[in-house]
Image (tube, rainbow, N blue to C red):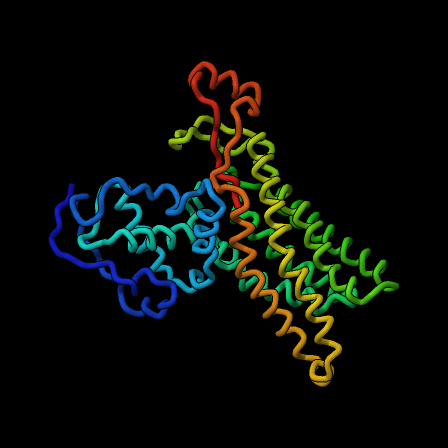
Length: 356
């Protein structure tokens, strides 16, 4: 194993998302040492830092994963964090690296690279982009919902963004074809627009407050269409399932169904605070003289309210189900069950990445 020739300490400037300007100067190049440094070799960075069997642990994990400041990191900072993580996995550690700095590097790396494929994710598809992107799009959907052109435009924008997010955060490593991507995108957009326009027509005779909930109904309907279609290949060929130690056992479409159902529930509930609370506030504010005098303030106020809700709703709803989900071996396909009975007769549960 290589020995150290010089010593550099991993600084917060290198790994901190609130110092993106630091990329103007080159990141330090680390020499390597064996695992005899400050860090013990027993830190399991293949799992999240917090206990994922509890909601609190999962919430702490996702507050870190969805931190919007991570989208400000430069490519150099991302690659540097990835190098620290890969080196540690191989038993190599920069001199002076602390446990907190290692975990910071791990979460920076995880914020930008897919856990199954290892590829760098599209910027707006990363979970750290969810709050700034969704607060803007959702705020505009809820402000401009009265006319048909506005409904069509903002539902199209939202479903285009959702398509990128769903593809970026898919589970497994099975690629989608261009036709499958196009089918999912067109179907979800059509479903969202049809739901919004249909409900707009129905709510013209009722309270204006009810009309403000039309965008939420459209988003919920679209999520039920978009996510399964965008991940349809997983339903056909399955997603990787492993034992508790991470040894790959095969692919399961049954596991894919459970994973996708959990993601749909999380995504719909994620939209509830941001699309359920602001309508009441905006309905009251629009009766005030100040907003009547300055109607242009409606959109930024709505965007701000949605953003505040999403800062909390996004990580908390992601935490509803464990990222590393599991299911009983008896719930798998008959062929896979038979294979596991022969090779792993003692195995009771299998594990899989449910996606986000």
